[in-house]
Figure 1 (spheres, one colour):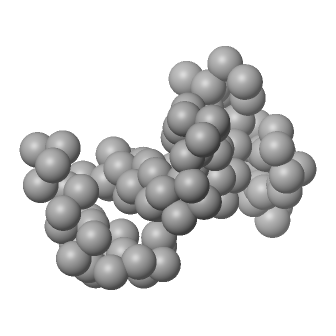
Figure 2: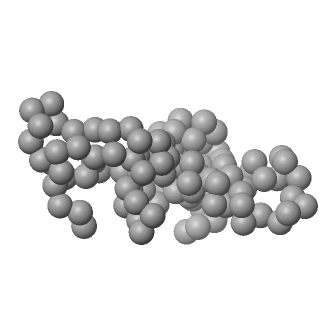
Length: 108
């Protein structure tokens, strides 16, 4: 775990956050940290979707690649907050509650 900092900067989009008084604070709870760096929520979501799409077969059709990306995004959100209602995750992923429920049921 990373110690407190006065500013936190996303390694992908360079958005920066911190306390208005400049005091050190812990990493924002919605941000993720990996060996590649620290990422804001928007970039963490994008990374999850991109990784799944990149792992798809090269001859995968665009609509199937889109479904793969959406599923990865839903799985990311479920993993981030397993207790979140399907409706809230659906809003975050810009999909339906039914799609979230389907993914949630398939991953147990």
